[in-house]
Image (cartoon, rainbow over all chains, first blue to last red; front, top):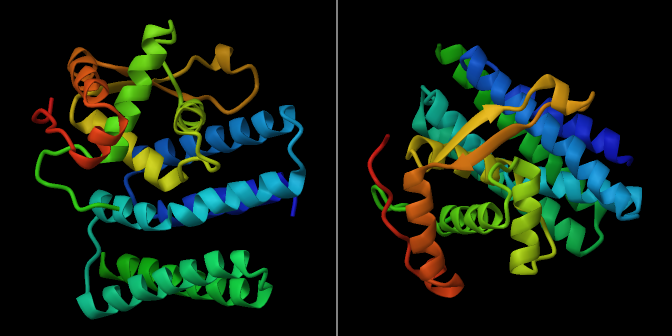
Length: 134
Length: 119
Protein backbone atom coordinates (compact mmCIF):
# COMPACT_ATOMS: atom_id res chain seq x y z
CA UNK A 1 0.00 0.00 0.00
CA UNK A 2 1.30 3.49 -0.84
CA UNK A 3 1.41 6.25 1.80
CA UNK A 4 -1.08 8.28 -0.24
CA UNK A 5 -3.53 5.39 -0.22
CA UNK A 6 -3.13 4.97 3.54
CA UNK A 7 -3.66 8.72 3.97
CA UNK A 8 -6.84 8.55 1.87
CA UNK A 9 -8.11 5.74 4.10
CA UNK A 10 -7.42 7.82 7.23
CA UNK A 11 -9.02 10.84 5.61
CA UNK A 12 -12.16 8.83 4.80
CA UNK A 13 -12.28 7.56 8.37
CA UNK A 14 -12.07 11.14 9.72
CA UNK A 15 -14.85 12.27 7.40
CA UNK A 16 -16.91 9.28 8.53
CA UNK A 17 -16.66 9.85 12.27
CA UNK A 18 -17.20 13.61 11.95
CA UNK A 19 -20.48 13.11 10.06
CA UNK A 20 -23.41 14.82 11.75
CA UNK A 21 -21.20 17.04 13.92
CA UNK A 22 -21.43 20.85 13.73
CA UNK A 23 -19.80 21.92 10.43
CA UNK A 24 -17.06 24.04 12.03
CA UNK A 25 -16.06 21.24 14.44
CA UNK A 26 -15.96 18.64 11.67
CA UNK A 27 -14.09 20.91 9.24
CA UNK A 28 -11.42 21.75 11.80
CA UNK A 29 -10.74 18.09 12.60
CA UNK A 30 -10.73 17.07 8.91
CA UNK A 31 -8.35 19.86 7.84
CA UNK A 32 -6.07 19.34 10.82
CA UNK A 33 -5.64 15.63 10.13
CA UNK A 34 -5.19 16.27 6.38
CA UNK A 35 -2.31 18.66 7.19
CA UNK A 36 -0.83 16.14 9.64
CA UNK A 37 -0.94 13.34 7.05
CA UNK A 38 0.72 15.55 4.44
CA UNK A 39 3.47 16.59 6.87
CA UNK A 40 3.98 13.02 8.08
CA UNK A 41 4.45 11.60 4.58
CA UNK A 42 6.69 14.49 3.46
CA UNK A 43 8.87 14.14 6.56
CA UNK A 44 9.30 10.38 6.27
CA UNK A 45 10.03 10.58 2.52
CA UNK A 46 12.68 13.25 3.16
CA UNK A 47 14.31 10.83 5.64
CA UNK A 48 14.31 8.09 3.00
CA UNK A 49 11.79 5.83 4.76
CA UNK A 50 10.34 3.12 2.51
CA UNK A 51 6.80 3.81 1.24
CA UNK A 52 5.43 0.60 2.72
CA UNK A 53 6.74 1.49 6.14
CA UNK A 54 5.31 5.02 5.91
CA UNK A 55 1.90 3.59 5.00
CA UNK A 56 2.06 1.18 7.94
CA UNK A 57 2.98 4.01 10.33
CA UNK A 58 0.12 6.17 9.06
CA UNK A 59 -2.39 3.32 9.52
CA UNK A 60 -0.94 2.49 12.92
CA UNK A 61 -1.52 6.08 14.09
CA UNK A 62 -5.11 5.81 12.93
CA UNK A 63 -5.71 2.41 14.58
CA UNK A 64 -4.17 3.44 17.90
CA UNK A 65 -6.34 6.55 18.00
CA UNK A 66 -9.69 4.88 17.28
CA UNK A 67 -10.83 4.86 20.90
CA UNK A 68 -9.89 8.54 21.31
CA UNK A 69 -11.74 9.37 18.08
CA UNK A 70 -14.89 7.67 19.40
CA UNK A 71 -14.59 9.41 22.77
CA UNK A 72 -13.97 12.79 21.10
CA UNK A 73 -17.07 12.30 18.93
CA UNK A 74 -19.15 11.36 21.96
CA UNK A 75 -18.06 14.58 23.65
CA UNK A 76 -18.89 16.61 20.56
CA UNK A 77 -22.28 14.93 20.25
CA UNK A 78 -23.28 12.28 22.82
CA UNK A 79 -24.58 8.97 21.43
CA UNK A 80 -28.22 8.24 22.01
CA UNK A 81 -30.10 4.95 22.17
CA UNK A 82 -29.65 1.59 23.88
CA UNK A 83 -26.48 1.62 26.05
CA UNK A 84 -26.08 -2.16 25.59
CA UNK A 85 -25.81 -1.71 21.81
CA UNK A 86 -23.23 1.01 22.36
CA UNK A 87 -21.27 -1.26 24.70
CA UNK A 88 -21.33 -4.09 22.15
CA UNK A 89 -20.12 -1.74 19.42
CA UNK A 90 -17.25 -0.54 21.65
CA UNK A 91 -16.34 -4.15 22.55
CA UNK A 92 -16.30 -5.14 18.87
CA UNK A 93 -14.06 -2.15 18.11
CA UNK A 94 -11.62 -3.08 20.88
CA UNK A 95 -11.53 -6.71 19.69
CA UNK A 96 -10.99 -5.54 16.13
CA UNK A 97 -8.10 -3.25 17.05
CA UNK A 98 -6.54 -6.03 19.14
CA UNK A 99 -6.82 -8.41 16.18
CA UNK A 100 -5.14 -5.85 13.89
CA UNK A 101 -2.30 -5.30 16.36
CA UNK A 102 -1.75 -9.03 17.08
CA UNK A 103 -2.10 -9.82 13.38
CA UNK A 104 0.68 -7.33 12.66
CA UNK A 105 2.91 -8.86 15.36
CA UNK A 106 2.28 -12.44 14.16
CA UNK A 107 2.34 -11.52 10.46
CA UNK A 108 -1.21 -12.92 10.11
CA UNK A 109 -3.04 -10.92 7.42
CA UNK A 110 -6.20 -13.01 7.90
CA UNK A 111 -6.45 -11.97 11.53
CA UNK A 112 -5.83 -8.36 10.55
CA UNK A 113 -8.58 -8.51 7.92
CA UNK A 114 -10.97 -9.99 10.46
CA UNK A 115 -10.03 -7.21 12.89
CA UNK A 116 -10.59 -4.55 10.24
CA UNK A 117 -14.03 -6.03 9.46
CA UNK A 118 -14.91 -5.94 13.17
CA UNK A 119 -13.85 -2.30 13.47
CA UNK A 120 -15.59 -1.17 10.29
CA UNK A 121 -18.76 -3.09 11.23
CA UNK A 122 -18.84 -1.74 14.77
CA UNK A 123 -18.17 1.83 13.72
CA UNK A 124 -20.77 1.66 10.94
CA UNK A 125 -23.29 0.32 13.43
CA UNK A 126 -22.42 2.99 16.01
CA UNK A 127 -22.57 5.91 13.61
CA UNK A 128 -25.82 4.71 12.00
CA UNK A 129 -27.37 4.31 15.44
CA UNK A 130 -26.18 7.80 16.33
CA UNK A 131 -27.60 9.32 13.15
CA UNK A 132 -30.91 7.47 13.61
CA UNK A 133 -31.16 8.79 17.16
CA UNK A 134 -31.10 12.41 16.02
CA UNK B 1 -5.83 5.70 28.61
CA UNK B 2 -5.83 6.58 32.33
CA UNK B 3 -9.09 7.79 33.85
CA UNK B 4 -9.12 11.54 34.45
CA UNK B 5 -9.78 13.10 37.85
CA UNK B 6 -11.98 16.18 37.51
CA UNK B 7 -9.76 19.10 36.49
CA UNK B 8 -6.59 16.99 36.34
CA UNK B 9 -4.23 16.85 33.41
CA UNK B 10 -3.39 13.49 31.90
CA UNK B 11 0.27 12.46 31.51
CA UNK B 12 0.03 13.03 27.75
CA UNK B 13 -1.27 16.55 28.32
CA UNK B 14 1.59 17.30 30.72
CA UNK B 15 3.99 15.93 28.14
CA UNK B 16 2.53 18.19 25.42
CA UNK B 17 2.88 21.23 27.68
CA UNK B 18 6.46 20.32 28.54
CA UNK B 19 7.47 19.85 24.90
CA UNK B 20 5.66 23.05 23.89
CA UNK B 21 7.62 24.99 26.52
CA UNK B 22 10.93 23.51 25.39
CA UNK B 23 10.09 24.48 21.81
CA UNK B 24 9.07 28.00 22.88
CA UNK B 25 12.33 28.46 24.79
CA UNK B 26 14.20 27.36 21.66
CA UNK B 27 12.50 30.19 19.74
CA UNK B 28 9.61 28.24 18.23
CA UNK B 29 6.59 29.87 19.85
CA UNK B 30 4.00 28.16 17.64
CA UNK B 31 3.75 24.50 16.71
CA UNK B 32 1.47 22.26 14.68
CA UNK B 33 0.17 18.75 15.28
CA UNK B 34 2.70 16.70 13.35
CA UNK B 35 5.62 18.88 14.50
CA UNK B 36 4.56 18.31 18.09
CA UNK B 37 4.17 14.55 17.60
CA UNK B 38 7.65 14.45 16.07
CA UNK B 39 9.18 16.48 18.92
CA UNK B 40 7.50 14.24 21.49
CA UNK B 41 8.83 11.12 19.74
CA UNK B 42 12.37 12.50 19.74
CA UNK B 43 12.17 13.60 23.37
CA UNK B 44 10.89 10.25 24.60
CA UNK B 45 13.06 8.23 22.18
CA UNK B 46 9.90 6.36 21.21
CA UNK B 47 9.63 4.45 17.93
CA UNK B 48 6.09 5.54 17.13
CA UNK B 49 4.31 8.86 16.78
CA UNK B 50 1.32 9.68 18.98
CA UNK B 51 -1.92 8.51 17.34
CA UNK B 52 -4.01 11.11 15.51
CA UNK B 53 -7.08 10.69 17.70
CA UNK B 54 -5.13 10.80 20.95
CA UNK B 55 -3.03 13.82 19.97
CA UNK B 56 -5.79 16.07 18.65
CA UNK B 57 -8.18 15.17 21.44
CA UNK B 58 -5.51 16.18 23.99
CA UNK B 59 -4.76 19.42 22.14
CA UNK B 60 -8.48 20.25 22.16
CA UNK B 61 -8.67 19.59 25.90
CA UNK B 62 -5.69 21.83 26.60
CA UNK B 63 -7.32 24.56 24.55
CA UNK B 64 -10.56 24.10 26.51
CA UNK B 65 -8.54 24.49 29.72
CA UNK B 66 -7.13 27.79 28.41
CA UNK B 67 -3.58 26.44 28.40
CA UNK B 68 -3.18 26.57 24.62
CA UNK B 69 -4.53 28.93 21.97
CA UNK B 70 -4.76 28.06 18.28
CA UNK B 71 -5.35 29.62 14.86
CA UNK B 72 -5.07 28.57 11.21
CA UNK B 73 -1.87 29.53 9.45
CA UNK B 74 -2.14 32.00 6.56
CA UNK B 75 -2.97 30.44 3.20
CA UNK B 76 0.10 32.20 1.74
CA UNK B 77 2.40 30.50 4.27
CA UNK B 78 0.97 27.09 3.39
CA UNK B 79 2.49 27.27 -0.13
CA UNK B 80 0.06 24.81 -1.67
CA UNK B 81 0.02 22.17 1.08
CA UNK B 82 -2.92 21.77 3.49
CA UNK B 83 -2.85 24.67 5.97
CA UNK B 84 -1.81 23.80 9.51
CA UNK B 85 -3.51 24.61 12.76
CA UNK B 86 -0.92 26.50 14.83
CA UNK B 87 -0.89 26.22 18.61
CA UNK B 88 0.89 28.25 21.24
CA UNK B 89 1.06 28.27 25.02
CA UNK B 90 -1.01 30.90 26.81
CA UNK B 91 0.39 32.61 29.93
CA UNK B 92 -1.45 30.03 32.06
CA UNK B 93 -0.13 27.31 29.78
CA UNK B 94 3.45 28.48 30.35
CA UNK B 95 2.89 28.32 34.10
CA UNK B 96 1.39 24.81 33.89
CA UNK B 97 4.20 23.71 31.55
CA UNK B 98 6.86 24.97 33.98
CA UNK B 99 5.20 22.90 36.69
CA UNK B 100 5.11 19.89 34.38
CA UNK B 101 8.80 20.24 33.52
CA UNK B 102 9.78 20.85 37.16
CA UNK B 103 8.09 17.56 38.02
CA UNK B 104 10.47 15.68 35.71
CA UNK B 105 9.52 13.06 33.13
CA UNK B 106 8.67 10.13 35.37
CA UNK B 107 7.21 12.22 38.17
CA UNK B 108 4.94 13.93 35.67
CA UNK B 109 3.76 10.63 34.30
CA UNK B 110 2.91 9.26 37.73
CA UNK B 111 1.38 12.35 39.22
CA UNK B 112 -0.92 14.30 36.91
CA UNK B 113 -1.15 17.98 37.78
CA UNK B 114 -4.30 19.94 38.24
CA UNK B 115 -5.53 22.10 35.41
CA UNK B 116 -6.97 25.53 36.03
CA UNK B 117 -10.67 26.01 35.43
CA UNK B 118 -11.92 26.68 31.92
CA UNK B 119 -10.78 30.04 30.48
